[in-house]
Image (tube, rainbow over all chains, first blue to last red; front, side, top):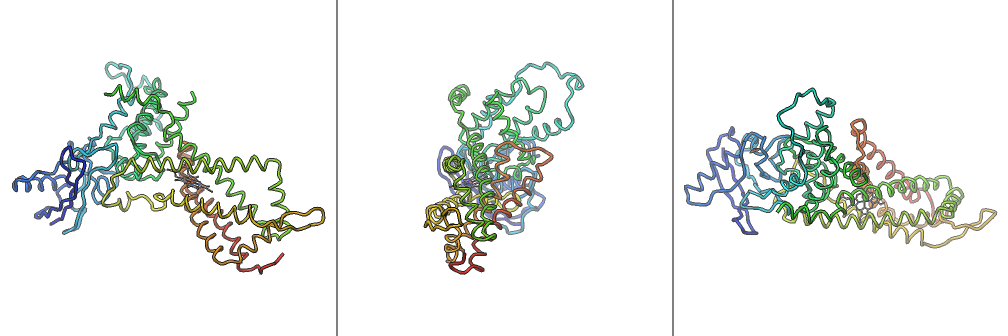
Length: 246
Length: 231
Ligand code: HEM
Ligand code: FES
């Protein structure tokens, strides 16, 4: 198959960028979207042009590195999957495709399709962890956890921190990310000791980083490769209020 | 680097979550008023006496001024916060996408235009107050005392087809705002539970439909079935 790509090109350390169009032929529908970019880059290198910079690592939907907005959809059109899990069979032959970086003030573009997502790391660094030293893995039965809570904690722990929630949100809000991280720990016994401070600190840091507020549109959950529920955001709001009062 | 961030952040407590908390509270308060106000206005179907006596009672109720101050503050607070958050949200994205998300990942159009809906509602409320609350003070006597004849004012106002159409349009905008707003305020206030999560959207829809149909019935009824000067 053949595709026409319009890819956002922005040089390193430059504030402005623009779309450039590329025609690319001899594609297999079984190729992944990232392999398409690989093939394009080989073509560009042969032409002595700068290849397109894009983030990737695991290429199997678990690391959260890939960060493409494809035809306006973070991670492409499909539900519950990352850009690296997208295949060309999802597109029509001759289709024109627009590829952009995640756009948010808190995610400055580094180059082309790569954005700086350290803002999310800083939110974790202020308290998104359990700081007791646990030694080696304890006997699982020694700390009983209610099944429903364990499941809920697990769904939230599935967050790979890719930032698609921010990318798709009309307000560029990181609420779903922070809510998932808070929920994961607030639901488990190990997270209780630091629960209040963690909530206050992470919410403050989210604010400081310049993410928007939540309008409860639910687009974040729909774009989330791990389909984390928007109900986690209600939990974060509740946790924040409780933490302020206690 | 990290330490600097934590330090600087320690002074921020007036976070968006709190602002949204207040938006949710004021929104719910206004939504409750909107419902009661609609129900009260249905007295129009019971004739001029029932309507005028009910309105007279409401306006002269002991708690009336407290309720009015409360409503005005809630309304103003809601608007100010809406503005602050909308500005913040605008700057959080700033660089627009060339293509909007589509299909499953898209954001519904009515959720993108909350501030525009709000602007229409604001204009509507101001005009509404000018027409009725601060409108002509007709008097009518039902035996014991002379009271304001609001019934006559309402019937007069809705003889004008332009007013009727404007009311219907504004109320449909309110419908959209409330349909999103009611369920959204539950989220903002952190009020959710696996047992009733599914029904929140349904309750919002039923509420918004009831309120809108209730209100729209008024100008339509007056325009279609009441002659100028009736009552
Ligand atoms: C009768 C009048 C009104 C009622 C009953 C009402 C109700 C609501 C409710 C219940 C919400 C949801 C709050 C939340 O998400 O927590 C809301 C959100 C909102 N309202 Fe209103 N509202 C009214 C008037 C206005 C006006 C006059 C404006 C602006 C000029 C406005 C702008 C907004 C905005 C921008 C939001 C979304 C905030 C966000 O999620 O980012 N509203 N409204
Ligand atoms: S490259 Fe790891 S999630 Fe896509």
